[in-house]
Length: 501
Image (cartoon, rainbow, N blue to C red; front, side, top):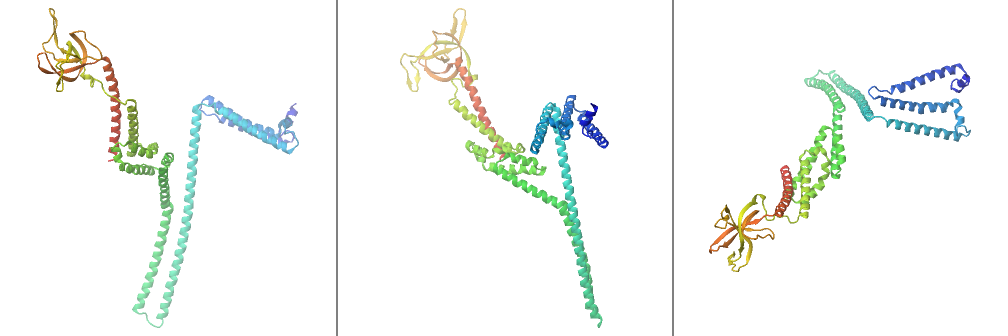
């Protein structure tokens, strides 16, 4: 039995010693790495449950990516003879078998890993995501650093080549200049071989020597200036030029997307810009549209709703740009929206309540509690309407009222003079004279002729019913709503006009 098991294990099937040694070492290494992977997946910062799930994830990886491929490839225990297609002698069938095995391994590993990962706690998943983001940022920084080092290295090489070329050119120019000086001295020597040098010849010689020195100095200065400027271009100016070009591209992109009204792309541009460009972003948009709003100042002052709507519709996409919220433009657009909404509310209010008006009560504070003595109905006889006096014997709906006193002997006794007129509410009617307690409000005045023939003006009190009070409360609420809407409209316009000064 032991011999049979050994024959089934790869490395031990041939019985050769060297193969057994290699197989034993390989199996030990494989077992060590597997345990290291499983135990290494534990994290002291995570919970026992998350660590257990992580270990099972490692086990699933070893099972699908190591054990199954090892068993199939080495044909452990001659397993292929039990599997369909593997035991076939046809090449294509074996290829299909390996493809199917690969697909099964991938699907199995994906399914098990997904299932296990879903069991992790929310805190574990959040930490893993944060670590992944930090690693991505670190890799990006390292990549950027390497690219920067590469740029510097290329710049240094280019600078070295430029210096070398400049030195060679300077050397060549110096040699040519020395050659010219030498030729001039040779000619001078020939000339002085027969004659002594004149004063003019000496001046020529001096000028030649000075020019030679100056030429050498100028060449050195020119070379130094060129190299210095070249280095500045590599390490300073190039960076400035790059930033300038980038800023120009950003400016063009801002203007282009403003024309399109694409607030999402504008926000992306803002987020990717540096502090200087962010400031430019806000200032440019604020200034551009603020000027246009100033040109339409009269539209706001005149509260021309339809024109204001057109202006807001054109600029509405700017309200999605959060950097503009506290700018003059952002505040104007916010109040413009409030103005439009308030006008829509007023329009709807007038539609629902086309005729809002007070009844007999204009102000609740004017309602009085009357405790008076009431006479019979007032006859129309003697009542003046304009220049006409009514002479018939008909009765009006009004009653004379006055103050009264009370005595145990005579009871309720009215004062001698009638003081006012009372008009009852609705169809109510008094059966006779006597004390009457009610609520009333002064509405107007009427001129009557008393029984002595004298004209007198009397205030008219109109009796207030509960329905009149309820009507007043309802109308008053509506009036307050309307007043609040109008107040919102006026305040919005006032703030807009102030910002457009």
